Image 1 (cartoon, rainbow, N blue to C red):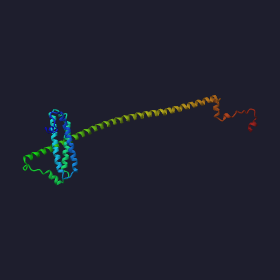
Image 2: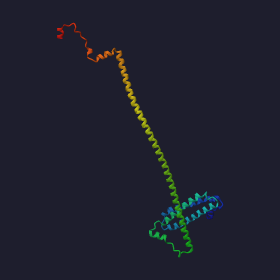
Image 3: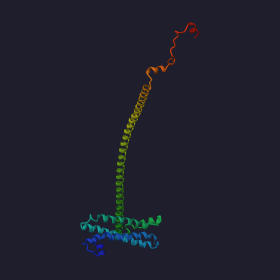
Image 4: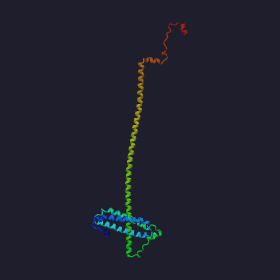
Amino acid sequence: TWGLFDTLKLSPNSMSGLESYDEDISTRMDVLAKTLETMRKKDPAQKPKLLTKAAHDLKQISLDIQSYDLEASSCGRAVEFAGSIAALKERHTKLKTELDFQRTEGLSKNELFAYRTKAKTAEEMTTEQMIEMADRTQDKGIDAIGRMKLRVNEGLTLGNDINEALLTQQERIAAMTNTMKDTQSVLKRSKEVIRYFGRQVVTDKILLCLLFLVIVALVVIIYLKYSGYSSVKIEDLTTKKSFLRPVSYTHLTLPTIYSV
């Protein structure tokens, strides 16, 4: 657990040494990531050697992360550095996945099967080999569990985001429904008001027509009154007899009357 402190030449009790863990490990991870990225362009003959070195560097980084976690806990600052340690572990998992992919890239099915089954049986292994194999199996299991946790956390985060989005959509739909109901109510009241004003306009037109007729009648009556026409003369004008003067036949003789 003191390996990285010895590398940095810092005292274990130094707070600056603890805070330098993240920067140092992140720098080494950046270098390893660039190495894995450019490894595909290298000569295939050089690739096994580069992969071996990358695996050794990744193993050392894993040990340093464990030391980082242990030292943070021993100093009582585990909560403070929990986010930093978790981020480093996540990057380590991604680098491990990329390294495994680089190891199996380009292999045929038979070669891939042979690569996965080349381990010796338990009877053929020495104690050191069995311990090494157990360590590798444990590391693979831990990495698999870490990836599973990462996927579960991503799924939970995505589920929470979707749930919040659905709740927001429901609230918007409810608000739109209330707005539509209010609009329908306003339209209904507006329709009733328009009908009322329509009836008022028709009634006003009828009253104006009647008032106009009354005014015309009054004007005609006033005109006839001041123009010299009486009610009798007006009635006489409506018959033909009013244009004939009465004739007296008393001064005529009978022969004259008969001839007429």
